[in-house]
Image (cartoon, rainbow, N blue to C red; front, side):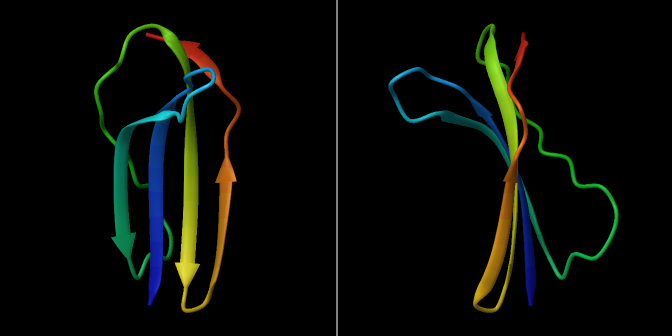
Length: 68
């Protein structure tokens, strides 16, 4: 089984970053997956995507962008 997650985080200095949106799917192959969430005020946001299949997995984090 293949799991795929898209998460949006707001960077918080000196504190764990706040997860603002998450969306996941199983048996994911191709296509788009959008995570919807609320804006938590102006700041630096980034996306984190991750996959897992059995005992292996991978993840990537985007660069931060100032939005809202």
